[in-house]
Length: 179
Image (tube, rainbow, N blue to C red; front, side):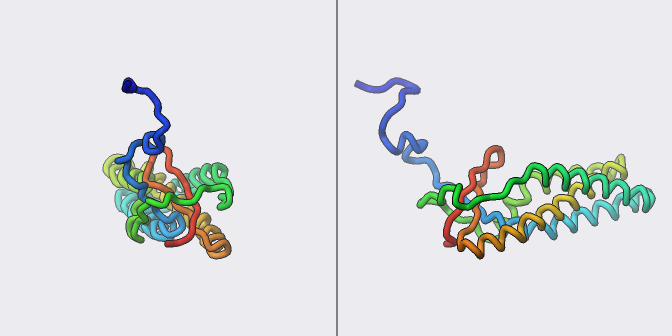
């Protein structure tokens, strides 16, 4: 007797998503945050310089950048919770670990890339909007550094590393020994 479409089974591979489901690719969160922080700061500086070159006054640029940075830092800081390594599952045995540059790329997706592109595009029609985007990027850099430094200290203390998979919509987090 065969099971119909949508039927469940007790086979372990069916519960895990099928025998052919790929092993998750994991990126180191602290490494990614440390790598993307200077990229965010540089993009913020470049977009801000472009805004001023497009005619935005220095005081208006400063106000726009401060507004964007404050918005991001306040929103980001209020949404952050302390990560407890003991509450996270260990990485799956079959997990594949990202290289250092892949961890940096994962940290830049999608937020840094999208805000950078929006800021660059805004230079063509609204230097004020571009400056706010620069402020958002500066806020990302500040918050990223503010998260990365304590995270690195916690990783060293516990001798475990925080990993995230490559899912952008609902990333899963794991804490495990460094490979």
